[in-house]
Length: 454
Image (cartoon, rainbow, N blue to C red; front, top):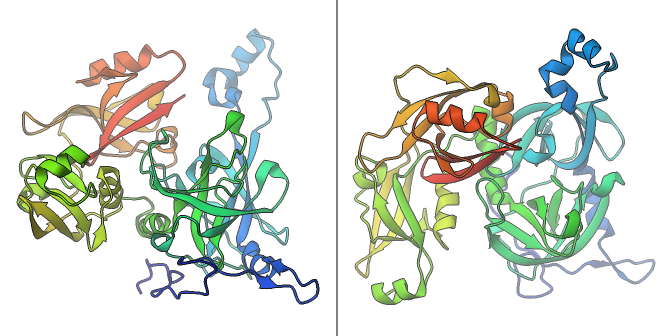
């Protein structure tokens, strides 16, 4: 393996004993002293790899430059001492002990001034941010520490509904806590979370503070990074979600290599295969994604893709729907050649396509936007009449407010607060008229995203 690859991902996943017909379920061992089933030996092995993440962020006063002005503070009789920095807590998982890599959620460390990692043995280390990917809600930290214990990655593609899992994290700041349950569903999406969704759903209790913690199978492997819950006021009601380990692995590989995830484009839009479409096309099932349009001179056109083609697999891995296609293409590095399996006019077709870089930046002068500190934008118009028109993000300073909110170079902003924008002037007018938040509708590669900036 090259220095950019993670040595901790096993090349071969070994199957264990099963409690039921499932890839991961294993019988808890019997406690010889008490004569009852227990997961204690498993937890003793894996819990040292799960850490607490303490984040210090700026207060509202620190974010407003007026409040940092001494004259302004005296004029309004404000105290000289600014508000204390705000602190929040989450969880993380050590995935590479040799390099000190810790994975957590992007939303846990977003806007952080300082990140402190606390190990199970109570040692504390200030963490360095290696990179983030808001689209998958993943961030990678690095700590300079010895005698670390990492958690090996499992293959989340082998999970089945009904497999037993354990969630480990730091709920409510209480300290390391373990809950158990089963995999309730796979491939969950549409949760109104920015970016790429392919969540594992579990009924193992995931509460505030569990974000970034470990979802572990009964072989002691990390199969997911806990990310979200659905419940009243953020309380757990047995519906929790985790980013699958296969997606985490793909993201971390790129972050280690580039400091970010560099997503390319296929140049084709798609939609789900409905039952009516499947019947009209003579398909055996609704699995796959049907191509709607193919952009001129795009990788898709060069590979011979046509409207009406149904993509059923990428590199031998089946495609469930258009969101699954989006997720898999979105994690392919620029320049990689992938194999597509299609159904065209009822017949199987295989073709190869090279993932291309995003649409070229315009040559016009870029402008700064006060509301998006750290980013510059310019007018954008695609080379064909069928292409997008809007405002392209030409530059984003690393770790700037714009970066931390999820903007990336090459993003094409086509709407602000649900109104179309076709030029920088329209864009500036729209963001200046905002009330409480700026909601950006943008294109990144082949995909549409929504980014909220408060």
